[in-house]
Amino acid sequence: MDIAQYLYINPTLDLKNNRITIDANGILISDDHYGEIDKLISFRNSRDYLLNIQIENLEKRKELYKKLKIPYKNIGNISSLESHLDRYLDEIDDLTVDIDIKKSFGNRLNLTFSFPRNKTYKWYRLHRKDVEDYIWNVYSAILILYNEDVSIRGEIENPYYSKNSSSSNRNYVTFTTEDNDLDFDFSRSKLRRDYRIDADYLADMFNKELDKYSNYEFKYEADQSGYNVDLYIEVDSKNFFNKSIYKKIGYLRKLNYEIRRVNPNVSIDGVIYYDDNDTIEFNIEDNIIRSVDLLTETENYLDRLYGDFSYRRYDFELEYNIYETDKDELKLVVQTDFSITDDEWIEAGDTGENRLNNEVKDAIDYIEDIWDMDVTVEIVDENMTPITF
Image 1 (cartoon, rainbow, N blue to C red):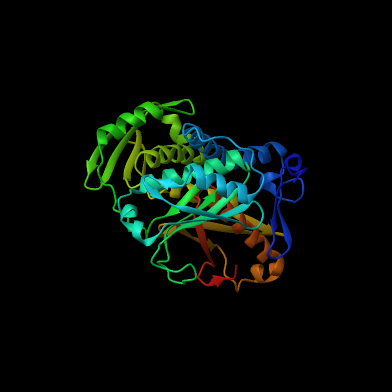
Image 2 (image 1 turned 135 degrees about the vertical axis):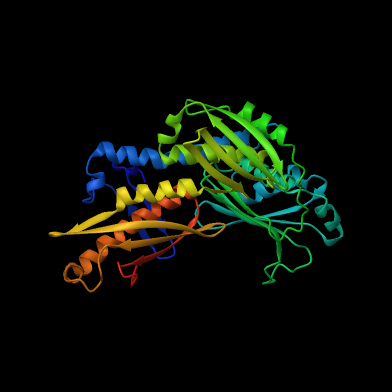
């Protein structure tokens, strides 16, 4: 880790298999895409761009936490951390909770929040925003008081189930950190959804908080459509549509942050436009960003960057297609331009299969970096015969 930044590599430790995996580059491997250091740096900077946005959003959350004016304490162990949080952050609105913290592997902590059955009526009074804001405050406190690099996962327990229950309903809410963000699952919370939406207020808030982004200016209009909000976003230059997909997804992540801060329940159907020919349609719901337009752009980028490889005198081409299969899962279908019975592919043997797998693996990493979703993969030849991945 000490030398990683100088070599532009990203090593990760797999404790389960006792293995170090190194995400390498043009210095260490032969790859035409990253053969020049300038291209490599550009690629690394693009991958870091979205993470920097998450860090910026996290800093905003920490500033909100500081306004609570909870006494600072230099905490060095789990027991002291638990006692401090139990003393100063033990209430979600007027529901008192008990906090249990256990250390997991690496820099991860497991948090469990519980309350007695006779206080369940207070739980039902809460809204999702109350709970999200509370967990964010706890997370911010841990980062400030205990360890800046820690990650957390945990649950708010349903008091009608025992701690040892294997039921899927055992927890009202689960949460985990991912790239300095918190992902929540409220599907079993039994909290009423707050559908009260003031579309004009939402547009005014965006015009105030997100009127500028990356040297571009934006204007917002919003209409309520049932439980959803139709959001119309005008950008001041068509050059915005020529920017990298990282920039455009980065903007949508900033927008998503503002939405969650005001009303995590709201679903946004939006369009970014300059004129009739330059538009990006998108949807944001439950902290998940979707856009058919940007998925198509992702496919085109993959075709350009990872769309071919060679073995000796033979060249092979790949075509990438991405499909939404679930709210937090994408499927990547990679179609080749050869048949697995072709002499060229048979002659390529293990070397050809390894190069194919490496291309697809790089494409998967790219998709996961941008979309922050799980990706399943299917590779097929020109006759749609599956190829092992």
